[in-house]
Image: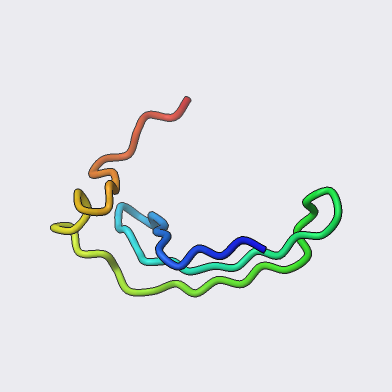
Length: 59
């Protein structure tokens, strides 16, 4: 089982706190996934959490 209590996700140029749990079975097949989207991370805290200020060009 993988648990992330301090993740972040970017949506429309805004960062949001994210918590998730991913349970795997044989051959690392995902058997369950739960997440909670939290509050928006204030832009002033982005550098503290190493969050990108600008989107990188697509590969």
